Each structure stands twice: as structure tokens, then as C-alpha cells.
Length: 538
Image (cartoon, rainbow, N blue to C red; front, side, top):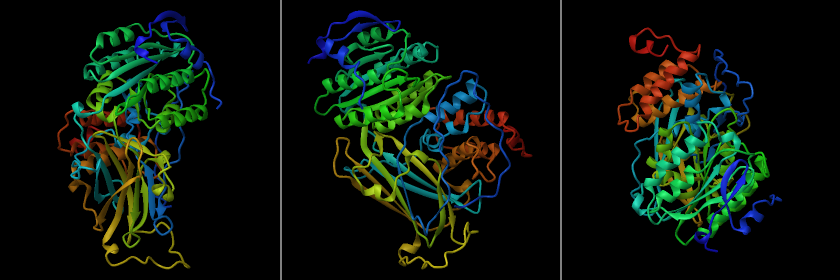
């Protein structure tokens, strides 16, 4: 079926004028899917402001990772996460709402991964990424060490990226009428149009009370047609999100060609209330459809009924990423500046496994990634789904470790033999391993990086990479009200961030300093330090 030959007929659906599709679509989209190291107790932090009356925002409640004993669990395994959504959402709470975010909205890994780090590009021509590691003293618990694990995806010039088959799946239901929803969504996608190439094709599917195709596949050389379709969109009606997803996947499959990058970009506040509305049903749908090679990127908009947990599930199970768009600058960052990373997959099912040497490390704690944890045996199992790495994307993880010789969190085991590490292995602190598959599927490949067993120096002497990541983590520990925050303070986080001297081309670090100040003003935990520099964070 040639979708380019479809001629639109206008119909009214859910308060929205949109073109009717071929009868094949209108019948199919109406079908339902049958388908333990304890830190001393810290002083309590102030509670985040309660949600406003009528607020139905939804966040997953995940307990934070605890310290693991290396003798019992020497392997830490997780799927990568490059979603920036939590950081942008935290920024919205602090700057637009003037309140602290709910702790469950703070995902440490997404705060840390919002920033760009200076990691080297892969030297091997057949490797999609490099592994990096660094160790320094932990700023909120000096008896511990902080280990940075960094992954750098290969940069690919836009001109060298494969042709894109993009299906914009846009929520135009009544809940999207606010200025920070559909109007911001349309303005955001307008910024993407100049980056499209003649070989890239765009389709637009919308859903409200029903789903419809408002723009058949159109090449990037005809931006005015794409723009006109966007300009005609209006909000109204209920939210048949499941039907919209099914139609979008069908359109993407129809337009798929050998060698193309096939992706749906779902833009919504996540409020699905018609058809497949449960997380489980939607998860089943995208899990099944990803087998066709069509990946899913999710863009969240608005506030008051933001279904954050649902959108994260969709992106995770759809082999894509999740971003929250709170302003046009964020839209430009996600859709233009990070075009390749957001829309083009370099490697899929990417997993990281860190093996700790018991001769050097007593205990460890992974900061964040609570909903990305995997069993140790999943690392070598190519059937286990994991995260996707886009062109030029980075992944950064932090571990807080208790070195041998530090105050133990538990008594030594009486009936277990001591570590039988070789002399060579005992000089290593840990080994980082990364396993990945090609985007279209293959036997997985392995990258490894041994990390020498040396005590980390002061955080002030660490690289810009580690200081920036540590500052953001400290900020997140406070917002999350972590029981492992130790001596963390907004003053320390702000001062550590300002010590980073590298380029700040997108202004993200400057903006972060302002967010720290705003959080400090909203929190009784803000540190009181005597010097002039520290007083700015009171």
C-alpha cells in the first residue's frame, strides 16, 4: 500500500478537524489489544509541597538502592538509561511551580546524564562506544569513595545517518489544550523541520476520541506541507492512546525500507483513558511491536496530569528514550542539538556490569538506576531487553563504595572463606564490562575496562567530569531526601559545580547553579557557610 497516495477527507473526531484515513486504518485502530550499609541518621529534610487539588500526576515509587556487600554480591548489573526527562521535570517544579519536586520524581541517573561529559571517542572502528572510569573521595561521606563509570557513544555526522522514517504520534485530546502542551508541542516540532533531509520522511498520526492519519509520509524536502499539517491541529475529546499507538506502528511498518531508521515520536501528557490504558496493556503493545524494528521516543508535556511513570515504561519497552519538554530551549536541545542521539540508535540492549574486587572494596551502592537493575545472569543473556545508545550519546553512572579498611557496615562472616583473589586481581579496584547488540539484532559483543585499585584523591582534584557528576548527584540526593545523603548540602553541591571549568556551550551548568540556589531557598536544609561564596546558596 502506498501511503503517499492517500487523499485526506475531513471529519470531526473529538473536537478536532482531521483527515479521514483509508478504511483499512479506520477499522483496525478501533480494535482493542487482546491482549547494607547504613549511614548515620541524617536530619530530616523538608517535605516537598503537596500536589495541588485536582493534580493527577503519576510517578513510580521506587526504593533507592542500598549498599551491597561485595562478598555476597560482587556483581552490579544494570541496563543503561539516557533519558533526560527527570531533570527537565525537576527544573519545571523549581522554576515554574516554585516548589520542591516530589521525591519520587527525582531519578538520580537522569539528573546526572542530563549533562555533557568530556569522554574520548572510540578508537576502534568497529566499536560503538568507549568505557571510562575515575575514582575520588566521596564529597558527602569522605570515608567512602566515588567511582564514575562513563560510556561514550560514537559521534556520527547528520549527513552520514541512515534515512529516517519518522511517525509523529501526537496527543490532541482535550487535556492537551494548555499552552504548555499542544501549543508548545507544535512549536517544538517546528524546530525539528529544518534538520530534516530529503531522504527523511515524516508522517503525522493524531489521537483524541479516535485516531487518524493527518499527514501521509512526506519527505523532508517539503517542510511546508508538514508545517501546514501541524498548524491545523487543535485539542479536544478523550484520549484513545492505544488506538493511536497501533495506527502509528502500522504506518511506520508500511513506510519502512531496507536501511532506514524507523521511529515513532509520541508526544503527550501521558493521559491515556480510552482503549488500552493500563501500563500492562500498553507495555504488551510496544513490546510486541518493537520486534518489527520500529523504536519509540516519548516526549512528555505539561503539568497537572503528567503520567511520568507510564511514559517511562513506554519508552523503555519500546526501545527508545523519554524526554520531558518544559520549554522551547529543551525542545531545541532534544530534537535539534541531540538529533542523532534522540532519533538514531547506535546499539541496542546495552548493559553494564561492574565486578568489585573484595580485596579492595567492602560494599558499594549504585546511585540511581533503580528501575534498570538486572540480575547478574541477565548480562550474558541476549534475550533480555536493556537500554539503547544513540549516536553520540553518553551514559554516566556513579557508585559510592566503602573501601577495605573503612568502618564496616556489617560483621565479617564466620563460616565463609576469605576472598581468593589472585595477586594481579588484587591490584584492581573493579572491572567494568559493557555488552551490546547491533540495532537490527546480532550476537552481543563485549567491551571491558579494568580499573586500578588506588585510593581516590580529594574530589576537588578530580576531573571536571567527576566533579560535575558528583555535584548533580549531591543535589539529587537532597531533593530525593535520601537516607544516604550523609553531609550533603546545597552549598557544597553549588560550590562543587562552580569549580568545573570546562566549556558550557549550552548553558546547562550555569542553569544548574541557578537551580541549586532556588532549591536552597525552598529548603530548610540549605547550608549556612561563613564565607562570601557560600552565602549565595543560603
